[in-house]
Length: 461
Image (cartoon, rainbow, N blue to C red; front, side):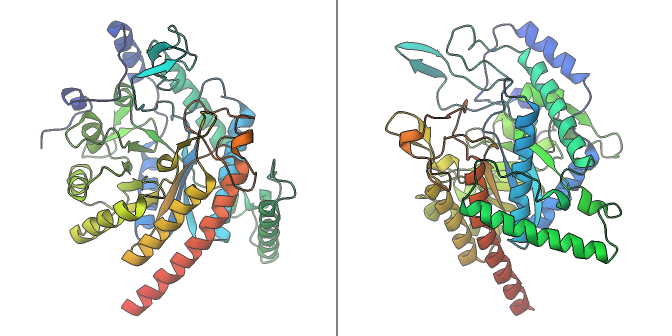
């Protein structure tokens, strides 16, 4: 294999990239980015990899989620806080109702670029370049908005930095403390079963905290109760941006390179060509890498990608994010599991139940039926149970806002009211109520899977 460099991807075939009309302006932006401070740090990246190794070993569970695509206009304090609160609530449910440690990775502070199925978007007889995320062009259907503008990368960097600063301030200030579990409002869910279940869980946690305090274990002297580890991730799509924010780790004699735009990057289902630019870039950085696995991925190609992206089989390095659809997962997932098992490779198996379950409603809006989302998760757990492997995580698109984008679930979104608050710039997201309902359903399956895993280990011993 050829020697890797941060820019060696430029010698490879590439897809899903914009055509910038002004190459000189693009070069100037990338030059500026190379001098900007890192968004994340080497120690954080290393810590995440160690935690993901624990997931691969069946010791914890991965919760990865956030917006389909972040936008510049929605960069607001309340929006970020509501998302983070919902994420913490989901993690709390998985921890206490699912009896599992949870590794928390957000699709946040960098998820600005989106792959598209077509380069062209048509509307009312007019054709324009597709919207590819705010880091590239604008969502408005006008010729001016759809021109790729490299200066948007600078705004994406600054927004990512501000979001990270806010999240770190919340964490350091104790916002994620267990003592706050009852104070996190369950917006839009008054009187629902989800509210009742969460309130009961929060009451139980409060009693646990009170007992710990009687034993002398308090929030003030137990850092683990006051804070939580939270990591960021996004799809490594715009490689010029990723290259510009890649830094050599000066503390390691190996001279490893770290992508400092996020703790974890993933390769999309449309950009996972073994000889392509996106795989080439990701093979050389030390960050944990996600690999989206869709119906077209064959076992031999997956093994080839494992050899390229994780040749030393480092635990925690690679997460396989499976996105098949509720009606296709039983056909496509088992052969991949068996191939990985037979090759003796170490991976995290995660379920993306969103992307394979997108349908078009009668009114023309894209949606994702909640029961199909849950159905894929259920089958994911069933298949791993049958194969004797560990269902290690879930990857969802969700928001803390009361949107009406996915039908079904506790908030009773239907095709009739789908357009009431359909705010997504790309794909449909679970709203807060649907996200918490999914978390409770996940917790039930996770608790059962971990119990079975313990029984299998005891039998093997």
